[in-house]
Length: 254
Image 1 (cartoon, helix red, strand yellow):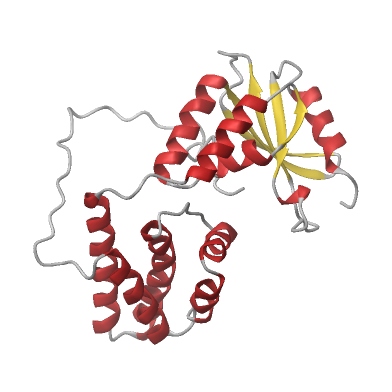
Image 2 (cartoon, helix red, strand yellow):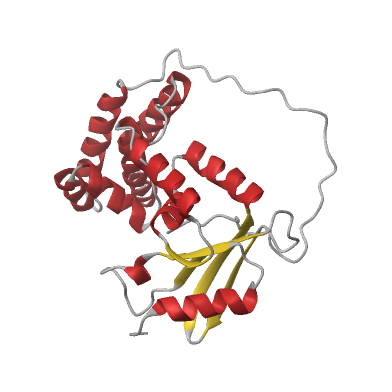
């Protein structure tokens, strides 16, 4: 698609959710990063208690692939809080940087921008120790594994985890997929490039992970303890409708 996505996105919202209080269009379709495969990423907020919220749906509209993240203000509040705790502010970015299609999202946009600028909460000591322990364990597995296939799998897991934990150590927002690389580049472009070069090099991956581990306080195994909450009484599981559980109501990518 090579034309302006905003009129089509606005028409989609008005056709599918005419009751919307406000809606924004976000994502790479609005930027220089737009590709032929870019879709319409929309956050749509309905009146409080609307039975159509919260939900996530994907569809094709006027030849555009579109993903809609539909909320009322109560569910939006909940999912923004979940994102903040997970340190992956995808929905914050969509709202904060989105283009208003209907209604007036200005207050919510300002709030999301402030959260993005402030950054995530620092890792608590227990979480930092858990991260150190996990990286230590992966490094140990890579050091001692003899099966070539296992070594490749361990190195791939270590490569990805080291990037996530580097962002945590620097108290930066995290991401998945392309946003993991974007966050690393925002932190340190040279470091991000070195991480990319280490992708298929086990020794370079291990070296990168050790540097991240040192930033977090060094290896941790002897003396590590993690206390878990005691489970409540057993509950009878309710099987989901259909063959798969529902996807999250917040985007896993911007």
